[in-house]
View (spheres, rainbow, N blue to C red):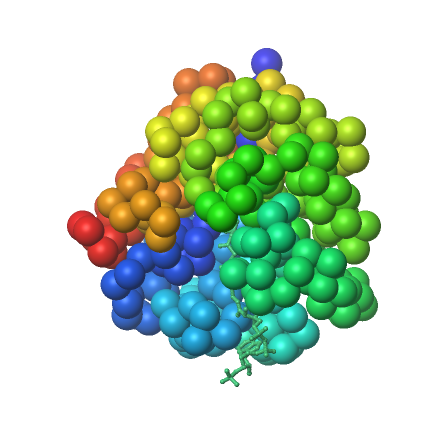
Length: 286
Ligand code: HMG
Ligand code: MG
């Protein structure tokens, strides 16, 4: 029988590089994206159109978008916190945009300088514009189980924020264990709550491996019917709250794990090895 498909969304160029203390040259970012596209990804998150004061690592977003070689079949996505970011992303040629909320009020304030409710109002025009222009809109929820400032997050709160993003028109909501402290038990409880609001095909898992449990959490999510996972080539990303600790789960590990469970990811393993080796060479602690 044909293997069941699981999609890996590659986030190294964005979530990975935004968390590396070292500034990576624009041409290296472009090379990374091109090497990744060559692996056969359907979706690559390339960069963010956010304030360069907040995320200096991605200040060259337009230049990166302009430099990449478009592979047919790959969608190149960018994070857009507001209308200004949305317009800039589209001008730069983004195929897809993502808005990002948080399940934790404190994290929302520190990350995007507004409350959860205010963030939804800021995203509303972005959602309307993306619908109008026919641009796929993805939504993120950060701190779905743990917040660095508030500790444990109630599952119903994560589910509520995910629902708000779905109501704005996001075709998929990526649930982020932003600091990688989620246990499989906590992740399972969170997913149970989220699934009462949103069907599994519209959810994605975004796990960080800071505590070494990302693959266990992916297993729990697979069990719950989720078939899309974010991962970062070379494990790029680290964690700003835990120097030296692993950040985003490594794409190679996720791909091997899924293949061992007889899922098909559609990625070329040899090319993935090559892209991951290049990604590792960009790490601040390489
Ligand atoms: P603010 O200060 O509330 O907004 O920031 P503002 O409108 O007053 O603007 C402040 C400054 O930013 C101004 O410039 C604006 O012009 C500029 P200044 O006067 O200081 O020179 N600005 C912009 N510049 C470029 N592009 C824009 C833009 N908008 C305003 N689009 C804001 C609000 C959202 C802008 C700010 O807080 C911000 O940029 N935050 C970025 C946060 C971020 O990117 N975090 C990382 C991504 S989230 C994440 O990693 C979690 C996730 O991966 C899931 C997981 O891992 O679990 C998704
Ligand atoms: Mg992340």
